[in-house]
Length: 535
Image 1 (cartoon, rainbow, N blue to C red):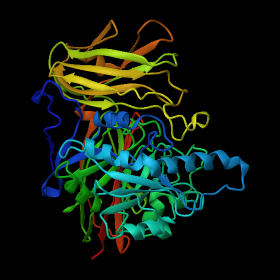
Image 2 (image 1 turned 120 degrees about the vertical axis):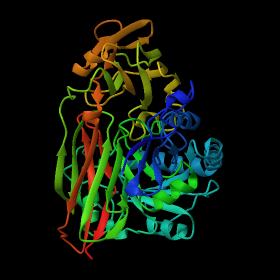
Image 3 (image 1 turned 135 degrees about the horizontal axis):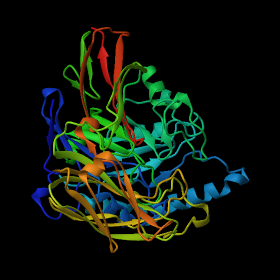
Image 4 (image 1 turned 90 degrees about the vertical axis):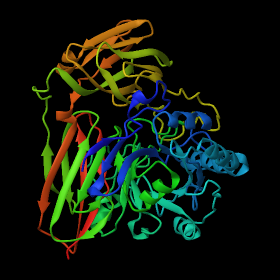
């Protein structure tokens, strides 16, 4: 079980890559070679009641995703509030959005989804969202790029109408109270719902004690709708994240992504992997997971009393710890070093995050410039680009087609020595919500070699030894202005884990195991479970 590089990672293959980010090829349980692909299948733009142009949304997604379903809001059977004046504006903007979609929005959406589909490079899917107070909100994901908009009177009705097609219907923001758009586990349909969304801008629904509580006005988190609640009820499903972002920026950093373990980035390979639950969830960073029990990978079901557990993790920053969870309880915790190893030699292999933003200006700051090395080489670059921090439409702007123009962040070029960036930031909207942009450079360079940032007429630099020792920040034009931050470099000793153990103590007729990874910067990853029957 080894980490291997995919072709997408090696930036030396070309001097101009519109999409340059870290993918990995693993040998999962000594089976066929598989890669990890990252995507977003639940996000919104002004096609219905989000904001931001649809074409800009596709362009933004191409910069840092492998696959995408841009998701129009389509219907809300049994919409509440018709006799409640508090909810009149909610009814109005939903009704108007659904009407726009049926008027001419759907044909435009299908046409653009087909236009952007590039097998092997950037795969697009047709999807739509159905709301439900009773069953919770769901996204219908279709295999066909000619899929129609299917009208339904309820979520079970939609599942019934799609059951003979290649489609999945998956719940999201699951942790709300049942009856108030929280998930109803009694309606779970394993054939149509191989995975569920446990993280988005709404919060984290691993369990009721997780990080990222629900802070949307839809209400607080409730245990009954969570992942662990469903697993403890005996349901079998994979887990993933998606942004549910409403500002036309799919894949917006920190809002959730879906990872798929597949042989190639094609519609067939992705679809087959999803159907087998070979998926996992990341909250922000593209953390790479390889989790196996005997000959099974995440999402599989096997039998046996002796469970040889093996996992490999590659983070994008300092890993805090990795938990192996068995039947909802911590089986073991693997802690990691809190500082870089001292015996790493003069040639340092590390990941360094460079972040842009801050300041007090509401207007966008346009950053143009480059990052380069004085010596050594850039192995890969991972964009951490985000859109505006909207989880729902802005009430004062309902019906406004162009609330703002989406500013698409781009990696313009990359060689072994230099990468050129074109990005936009604003002030952070509050002290707990980030509007920054960043990239993560994986580099190999001497300790004395310098990482140099030249943007908007200013240049700042630090050598690798400094970056191993700490984090450095620089204002562009003085206090309260925009700034650049060089994060502390993370070496393989702190961002990689390789661990094996054996469990020979079955607890139930069927035990389930999953792993969760926490980085010290607050990014998480959650694997789909592996189920082991006690036979």
